[in-house]
Amino acid sequence: MRGLWRTQQHRHELSNMSEVYLRTSRHGRDTLVAVCDAELLGQTLQGGRVPFKVSEEFYKGIPGSVEEAIAAMRRATVCNIVGKRVVEAAIGERLVHKRAIIYFGDVPHAQIVKF
Image 1 (tube, rainbow, N blue to C red):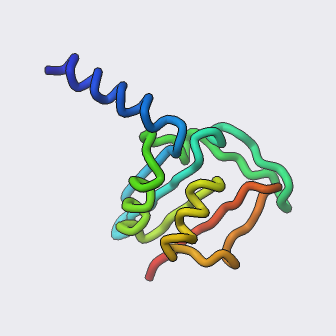
Image 2 (cartoon, helix red, strand yellow):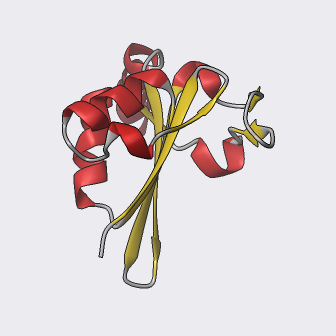
C-alpha cells in the first residue's frame, strides 16, 4: 500500500506543480494559509520598499491548484498570498479587494485577516 500512495502523491505533485504552493498551519484559534504561485517559491522580489523573500520555509507546503488554494483560504482566518494567479483568483472570488494589494515590481501580494 505504501508504494501505491507514494505513486499517487507523486502524480498529484507533478500535475499541480505549475500552479501554486499551499501551506496551512494552526496557531491557537487561527488557521494561517500561505499561498504562492509555484514559480515564485524561493525568489526574492524587488520593487517595493524592501525586498520580499518568498521563502520555502513559510510558503512551501503542498503543490496544488488555484481552486484548492481558494477553498483553503475560505476556511482560514489569516492568509498571505503572493503571485498573479492566486491574487487575481482571490480578487475574483471577493476574498480580497484590489485596492488592498501591494506590489513588488509587477508581482501582487495580499494579506487577509478575518475577525
